[in-house]
Structure formats: C-alpha cells, structure tokens
Amino acid sequence: MSGAPALLAHGVGGRQDLPITLGQLVVAAALTLVVTFVALGVLWREPRLDRDATGGRPVPEWLARIVDAPAFRAAVRGLGLLAAAWFCVGLLAGPDTADNPTAGALYVLLWVGLVPVSLLFGPVWRAVNPLRTVHLLGALAVRRDPERGLRELPPGVGLWPAAGTLLGFVWLELVAPDRATLPVIGVWLAGYAVLMLAGAALFGAGWFDRADPFEVYSALVGRLAPIGRADDGVLVWRNPLDGIAGLRPRPGLVAVVIVLLGSTMFDSLSNAPAWLRFSQENGLPPAVTGTAGLAVVIGVVAVAYLAAVTAAARIGQPGGPAPADGAVSTEGAGSVRRAPGEIAHSIVPIAVGYVVAHYYSLLILEGQRTIALLSDPLDTGANWLGTAGWQPHTGLVTPSGVASLQITVIILGHLLGTLLAHDRALYLFPRARAVAGQLPLLALMVAYTVAGLLLLYAG
Image (cartoon, rainbow, N blue to C red; front, side, top):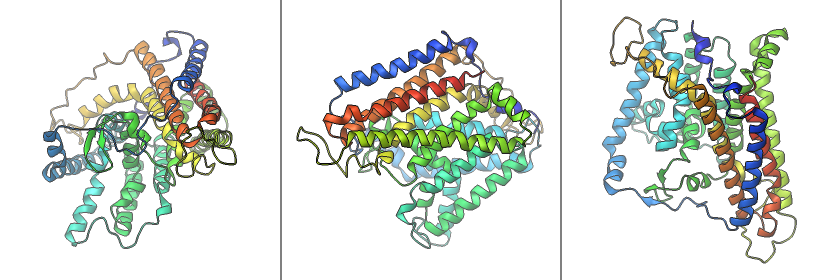
C-alpha cells in the first residue's frame, strides 16, 4: 500500500524540541524518581490502596440503569458489529492504496485509540468486541450457554494465550513485511478471527478474556479508569490507583505487561538512525533483523524486571517469621515465586506512559486522516459518513508541545509505577524491611525511565 511510510512514522517532537538538554532531562527524571522514593518511604508507611477492589462511590442511579440496561448493551454490540462490517468493506473491496483506511483503522484508531478510550471508560473492547458478539449470536442460535464450551479451560492457562496473541500483533505492527498492505492485514485478521471463535466454541466466552489481544489490552488499561465495578458488580467512581491495585496475579500476566512495554520500547529503537543504518547494512532481510530486535528488547525488559523483583523479594522477606511490629502478611506475602505477579500491576502505567508518548502525534494526525477516509472506503468519491472533507487539525501537535507531553507522561508513568510498587511492598514485606526491599525496584524504574527517554529521543 503506497503511503505506508507516512502511517508508520510515529513521532513529531524530537531532541531539538526539548526544553532542556537530553542529559539534563535524564538526570532530572532519575532524581525525581529517587526523591519520590524517599518521600514515599517517609510519608507512606501503611498500605492505602484498595487491593481487593471493594471501594468506590456508586455512580448516579440513572447512569447505572443506562449502562446496565440490556438494550444499551445490545446497542453497543450492534455498533461494534456495524463498525467491523464497515471496516471489512475497505479490507475486502477497497483499493490497495494510501487512500484505503484499513491500516489506519487497525493500527491507529483501534490499537492506539483503545488507550485513551479505555483510560476514560474502562474495558470498552469487551463491550464492543464484534467477535464476542458473533460468538454470542451463534450460541443463541444453537441454544447453548455462551459461557459454556465443549470443555473447561484449565485455570493454569491464565493470560498466556493473550501474551502470545499480543506478541503476534506487535510483530505484525512493527516487523512484518508490507504490514500496511491489505493482503498482510487480511491474513492476520483472518487467523485472529478463526483462533478467537474456535477457542470460544471450545472453551466458552471466557476465552476472549484470556486470549483476545485487544480485549486484554483494553482491560489492563481500563484498570486506570475513574469508573469501574466493585467486586459486587456495582458501577462506581473510584481512585484509578485503586483500580490498578486490584489487578490480581494470574499466570501469564507478567508476560502480557512485558510484551506491551518491550514492544513500545522496540518501536522507539526501530526509528533511531543507528538502528535504521544497522538494519540496512547487516545484509539480513529487514524482517529477520526486526524480529530479532523485538525479541531482544522484550527479553532485556523481562530479565531486568524479573531480576529486580526477585532481588526485592529476597531482601524484603528473609527467612523466618515477620517481626511483630504490625507488619502486613497476606497470601504467602513476600514469596519469591509470587513476587513478579504481585508487582506486575506497577508496569501498566509505565507502559501506558510510553504508548501515549510515542503514539500521541500519530493518533491525532493519522487518526483524523483515517476518519476522513472511512467515509468512502471504496474510494468512489462518495461521502457516506460526512467526514470525507476533513482536513487534519494540527493545533494539538506542535514539536515543542509533543516533546513536553512525552516527558510528562513518561515520568508520570514511572512515578505511578513507583507508588504502586511501594504500596504493594507494604502488603508483601515486613514493614521493617519494605523500603530496603524496594531498592532494586527503584533501580528498575530509573533504568526503564533512562532507557525510555534515550530511545524516544535517540534521533
């Protein structure tokens, strides 16, 4: 598809647009994390976040009635199906040119747009997922409970299927040859649809919660939304940090968050001049180099995380009983084996920060262009949605403004990660050792911050 390079160019702000030098920025960001860590150790001495997701203030009754009404849920599902059908018009019958909105709809409006929408409204993809709706309609047609499949999904599976499908999607987005062309997108989406629907038929609708990459992605980000559900199902306004603190360890959770964070870091690296020169000069096909690079970056992020969390657990929870000083001990607290899953929620705001920093300008500019093109996916000159004449508004995307936003969200993401890790450490470790146990986690946050800023502004 011609025009793909424009779609895949993600950034606007650069090193020359920073309000301070890159070296000063890196030092200031690292010092900010250290100062925050010290302040938390002094002032935040008891766990305060709602780890069990029981709190929150109920939303107004009229809002709860609307959101929970069967008619509203059916309408949302219907809109999801209509949007998917309109998308398929461009995918299956549209021209394979830059004026086809398919690549922008998938990579920009869906993948990137899910982040701000989920941050505002929670796990929206679960409500609109067209494949979930297709499965529901199929189950109703054969008079079968959609929650029940032919067999039970083993509890130990957890989110491992989602880790695999997420890795498959980010490979498509970042590495696959001709990834903005209709045949490549069509083949991937066909495989995705078959895998989701076959899995749902075999294991029931719960398969989507564990395997759909967009649904799991939206659910993780949606934990940071100001609206959510308490453990009894009541719709509540909540502290977003309580929402993410209620994310419980599950098999595969660590893999999911590491793939999200590592893939975004690789995307920054892949746009750096040094990487581009290496890719062009090493004599290997770009897909081979890109696949190896993606695997290495995700592997480095994973090793750093596991090493830091394991060290924190060993320091924070030595052998023997916890001291009788009011320390909190729950569910095998401090177990080295459980520690990575217990701390995984702290990586979510970091990953969100990188996504916003890296893709903000892409979402604003290419998102507007894609919406305009969606009015006529067949490129016939029609204006079915009334958006064909839209011209991208660039007022929200200035180089200095984008650079300032990138700095803010990256540092904010790491600050929230530090706070979440600190609060969870107070649950996991004896209080006398909780702060010392977090030193490896602080080192990890500083390392992620420095690496993220250097990668983002490597050009």
